[in-house]
Length: 134
Length: 134
Length: 134
Length: 134
Image (tube, rainbow over all chains, first blue to last red; front, side):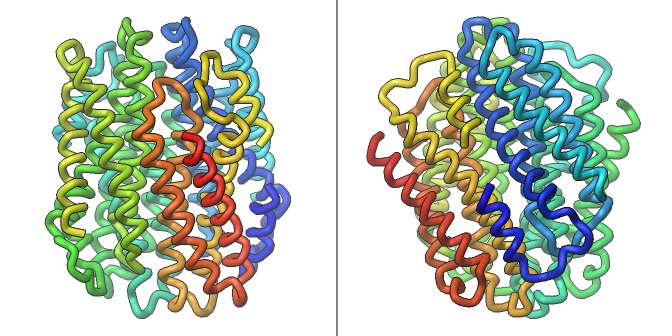
């Protein structure tokens, strides 16, 4: 997280009106969620009941892809495009909500789903808060 | 493109109502556009006038990230989630439109921008058509 | 494939000694293999015997990640770094060989594994041939 | 970092001999480095002297791609493949060394290059240490 903030602070041009702490939090939440989803998909794959977790694995993989893309997009500030930014953030928010809903159904049985669901909810919240400032 | 179609045809479960040829076209368009944007960012970087192409490079990178994520998401069919799918497709469509708009401004001067803008427009169209069937 | 070639042809600076047709083939093979691996992982996930395909799914996901990264790296030509290029190509070659070995074990039973194994072998070969020219 | 560790601890099967703290550190270093490189490429793009930073931008982008792929690969533990793992780790290590070398040349002039070079060195070190345990 400290490197994310340092990189934001050393960006050489103006940012416009963006809320920097919320932006740093959103980048950190995207990276954390992408990693948690990648790891949760793999942990589900190693469960004996993997056949009942295939929707969870798939949603994890989709959510990881969108969080990684969004984390990269929010790490760039040059030539800001409001439409593209909002559309990426909205897609990430929806993916996190879907993945949290899915993982929460298995949270009682699988700790990795519980932890992943929490990471998804944090990222969903960070995206929502950032969307509200744009 | 033929491998994309073959992989679709050998998926072991039902697809529901999705229009398979449009889906295959959309995956192919996402991959083509992601690669064109990655290459266009790099070609812009090697232009003597790179300082005037920084917004183009940035939009290329964002578009590449979203097209790659969307191409992966559309290569999965297990545990389909309509909200997530639509949000990803919409983000990809918006990114392709933004990147095409940007590249078209340099198309007269840079062939790589002209070719990339065309790939973006094809992907925007493929996403729009697929969105209309969902 | 034609867009990959066109982007190579419109790169504005010199390439040095690289074999352009082999480079274009290698990029195309990386993208094809990444998509096939992503789709094969998902198809395996929908098989009734998914519990016996978990190693295949995992190797597919790793191979997709490395092929996508390598396809992007080979789409860039500015500021060429021979060590980095060779290391990426070698990692991609090894991943494709591992994934082909794994998918071939299920090729008689699952058509998606057969098609994916062939895409992996093509990409392994394209990487090996390009490595030999560097 | 705490979520990375929690996901490791909740993986349902055996890990074999891998050094878990070093693995967690390596995943965290890969994600941190990928983000720093993405942000450094963008910060370089906004410098007035961007024309002198094109090799730095390109190396940043390659390093980000390999660190992201390697971070995902190390987040998976099912069906471990030693050859693939070592090849990915080696490619990541080489990319981080190349990118650190490049960014260090601009570290006196650009704070973002200094911070990015440090993130690259940390990731290079984490990869080297993990390689030594495999």
